[in-house]
Every structure is written in C-alpha cells, then in structure tokens.
Amino acid sequence: MSSNQEEVMIHPDDVVMLLIDHQSGLFNLVKDMPVADLRRNVTALAKVATLLKIPVITTASVPDGPNGPLIPEIHEFAPHARFVPRQGQINAWDVPEFVDAIKETGRHTLVIAGTLTSVCLAFPAICAVRACYRVYAVVDASGNWSQMATDLTVARLVHANVIPVDTFAIIAELQQAWNRPDAMEFANLFADHMMPNYRLLMESYGKAQSVVTQGRETVMDAADSPKN
Image (cartoon, rainbow, N blue to C red; front, top):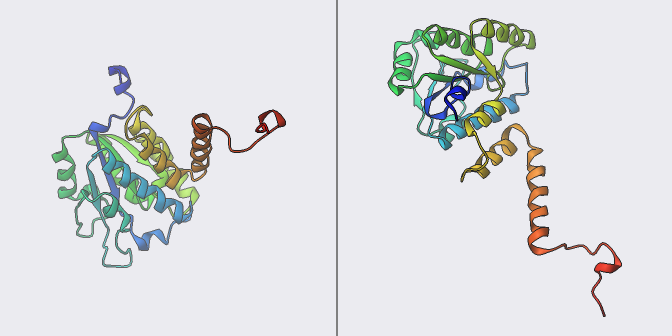
C-alpha cells in the first residue's frame, strides 16, 4: 500500500476494534435489520480481529440488568478481547478505563460497532473523532430501534467526520488482497456471515477447477463417448 493510499485506506496494524453493548436484551430492540444478520456480522468482526491479530475492546451497559449479557460469540471468537466494565455510564467514552485501554494499544484507527446505533455506537464514535482518532462506524454490526433512527444517526456521524461502513466493506479493506495464504479464511467469512450465496460461487469455482485437473464426469456428446 502506498503512502497516499494509507492516508485514505485502513491499515490493519493501526486498528483497534471496539465492540460495544452487543447484549442479548438490547438485541430485542433492534428493528432496522434482522437480528440473525446482526449477530452474524458481529461474529464476523470478532473472527477477522483474531485472524489479523487486531486488539478488541468490549464493554457492556448494566449487563446484570434487562440489557442482558454480551452475546457469547464475541469473546468465543476473539478470546484475546479485553472487557472493560462500566458503572452505569451510557457513553463508553465517559469511562476513563475504556479510553485508557484504547490508548495503551498505541493505535489510532478505531473500528466501532455498538447496539443501539444511535447511542452506543454514535456517542463514543463522535467523542473519539474529537480525541483525534480516525473512526469507522460499522452500521450493519450495530442495530437500532428503527430505520429512521439509523438514517438520522448516519447523517450525524458523517457530519462529525465518522466514516460509516458495512461489515463486508470493512473486512475487505482489512484483507487488502486475495494473494495471501489465509485468503480462504476470508472467503469463508464472507460465505458464512455476510453473503451466504458466496458459498455457491466458491463451489462453482471448485467444480470448474476439478474439471480442469480431473476431467469432466458427464459425457456431453457422442464425440466424447468411449470407443468400443
């Protein structure tokens, strides 16, 4: 990646991933996207963070109350994630330990997802920009109580110089290239999480390759029939 590209594109070595308030109770409030899709997207972020050794910081809002616990997939697939508890603060950026955990990484690009989008994602994202971080908000790994609320929040984020993105885009930008030894792991991420139909493409390509190396299994015309 050229120096000019680094000014506008994400570099994995400078990223910290913040997964905020992805809690079972709050997921019940999500109405702007299917909760199953939200859960898959959050899990994909946890997996890519582990794949690329990106630091992950999590937190939860009153997890012993109706908001519920964090969904288990986050720490299951990102076992290196650091959990920072809160004492009732709505905005995670109001917790000094949370901000300090980010500073300790020495990184300056934040990839943030949080439920609900208009609060748990937006508040710390806007504050992080003011603190001179480069901030990407993963909207389809957050979830909100209405589509209108999400549309208004994205407008507010853009106005505050936060960059709104989707899960597929952020993972592809972190991947950077297909000519890498772990390329199939990225392909599986896309197929297992964001784009299930991508698995069909992979299967078709695999079959085409087997025809090249092993020959066709179907006799299509008389010219191909074995001679007696």
